[in-house]
Length: 299
Image 1 (cartoon, rainbow, N blue to C red):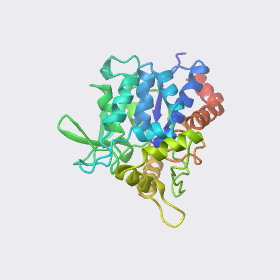
Image 2 (tube, rainbow, N blue to C red):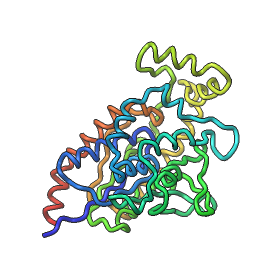
Image 3 (spheres, helix red, strand yellow):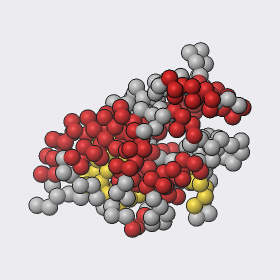
Image 4 (cartoon, rainbow, N blue to C red):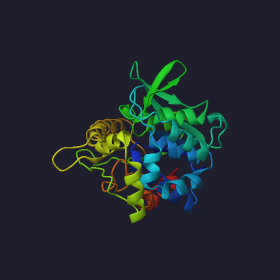
């Protein structure tokens, strides 16, 4: 018997996406090799690092993030289709992961994006890896859309939050799907700038937020008990939409194994909580290893 070719579909979910690192680490620790890696949004980012052999570098970056570092990646703008241009974070990710041609990667890789004009799903399976990452994570209302081959592309989570279909289309015989948003819709997790790693970090944030741009960002992130912030509304709406789309698509094209890490406690912009997210991903995957091994043995 031959072992089925394993594919993994890494779902969207912003800061919760660091859990994908834990899932991939658990698979590697069990000696299971993934041949096909597909992702939407943050899933496309982690998947790219895996396919390029740069997952340890991305993990080190994620674990070292602080609020100050996160804010430093947000190049605010008042025009151009998004509040954040996305150039800084793109440069950071490209420096970490590289920008080889997708077709030259050791693993089969695909990212999902959404075409702005038609709303159709776009599969990015060749060309520059950095461009694919940037397009797949262009959350509307936050990041500016990305021009690719005469099209304006947006976040892949708008049409296919957990791209099982792409995994199968790329030849995967056994598909694992990682859904980061199970049970998240409707749970408000306000992000506050009081979160800090130390007293010195708090002082650094205070200095960083002086000025009009910083004050505006504080309002977007802050919110309160009585009224949700800009990000509460934006991300809450996207979570509701993606949760419904995910349910429908997974029902129509179910994976062989569905991994759903417990991540409700992690806010969508809390990228500084990588340790918790990675641990949750590892734990969720480890619990499913016996079921996965049984499927492999049957195959």
